[in-house]
Image (cartoon, rainbow, N blue to C red):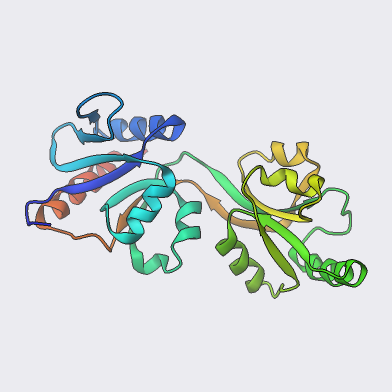
Amino acid sequence: MSDESPLILGVPSKGRLMDQTRDVFAAKGLVFKKTGNERGYRGTIDGLDDVELTYLSASEISHYLKTGRIHMGVTGEDLMREHIRDFDRIISRSQPLDFGNADVVVAVPGSWIDVTTMNDIEDVAVTFHHVHDRRLRVATKYMSLTRQFFSDRGISSYRIVESLGATEGTPSAGTAEIIVDITSTGQTLRANHLKILDDGVILKSQANLFVSNMADWTDRATGGRDQVLERFAQNPD
């Protein structure tokens, strides 16, 4: 990049996250404008010449922040924590945006009456292995967060089953005994006869505006960052 390269801000490309991002930024006086046509993937912020928008999926935003392809981006903290192991080195700042709220949780069958905490999981795992001659299966899309959370609590007698579909359905389908998934109300878990452990909240997630240390921070990009963050500081909720 040259010293004239602007700040690249990654924002969600579709759905409710895109609408909520646009609305939150507009409330701060940062109005998005798409360039080309409404189906395009580039844009600007009205009045900020040092900022360019790129419309990406939520997972792309987390990857691009990690690799420095964008300077700033809006995505969920759950994706960032899952995909960026060295988070505090990669990300210099995060600005909570108060939408996209959801928890990453550990849930077990409601019929497991005596299992209410993570400490109970290890006891169940030992018994399960003795009876079935295999480890408890934990279905999840959040493999890194799951491994770290279980390790921190001294739980090792399990194996992860990567979930490629509806994670909450895996216990009833017989493909897992426990799940780690994201939930906002718990309604879907209850509908599938699952309960969240009392101490089973791994992460309380929401959308954030993240700033990457890995990008090429030209003078122009730095100026764009400061202008965006100043608007959030001037217009607190």
